[in-house]
Picture 1 (cartoon, one colour):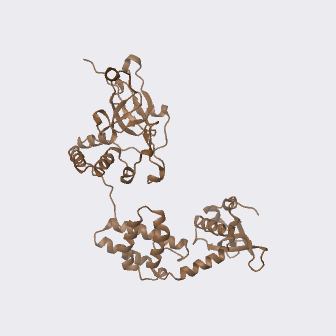
Picture 2 (cartoon, helix red, strand yellow):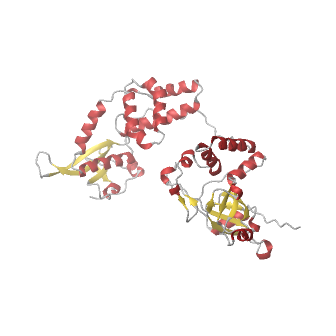
Picture 3 (spheres, rainbow, N blue to C red):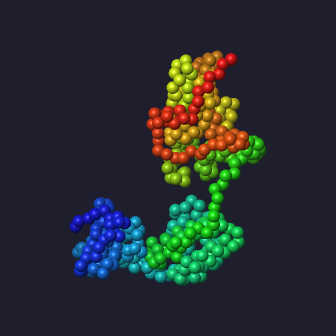
Length: 420
């Protein structure tokens, strides 16, 4: 049986045969060894396109005998390729367990027949999807309870129209809640698409409905006096919220990420705090190595910019100054005032000084480790804002090589020689 990787373009351009029907079998599902069957698109001579599966299962009427089944699981374009593939995988997994997916679907349809109102469908949506997929599921559940269920709760699910959705959103807009209207639309849009995936309705009434409220990005920035007042208030509040808010100001990380910080997330060998992917919104581990740029020896050695790698070794600087951090990247007095970059070329701080090894050796009796200090980018940003000085926010790009980073640093760094 020939297969090919089905794509949206392949499906859209699939032509009807002169007579009978033709099946385009999907190579993606066919190559999944754990699935005991096939999935494809059936096109009839009338141009009707349907998603089908083929599987083998024991004949319940003749124990020990295997029968081959061809079953329709949905129509195109009501089900997209991605939705149909997922439905096929679920059905074929059941077949692999000796369960006829058609009988299982009939049982599910019986359950669906019991869901007659929007409220019942919302309850199922929250239980089966929202609670499993969203950490903020209580907020979504409350949004439905406040804005959707009181208006549409007793309506039959298939009877909801785009006009009903517009009227729901208009109520929120007229009451001066544009942000709430946008959030509600996002929630009900996902809800109705979920209902389509479960084949409870054929079309979502939210299709082609745009967000009614105009949102503006927040640009409020605290000035130095406000930061000082907040910092002092954190000392008064004490553990645990005082230190947590200080870390929020210093790191720029999200609230839940800082609140969930664990000793196990700190790599003392690399001297870096790693946010595990489970704790980040983007579901990716977040590490920030550092690159220091500058002219370490001035014109005595070379007037060519030097880029040196390193890691954060402590989140506080000289005298436990929380506006600074320590790093192990080698710097010299000539680096002072130079930028500190991450691996993507974004400025995350400014070099200020290195530990005076001679004084430390005199006090400790031995040479200390390589410790240097930088001002955090958040502190620099606050200073620029309060001083009325313009600055540009960085953008995420792919990692740069040291040579590329040096070229970037040359456009942002100027060697200044001071004489007494």
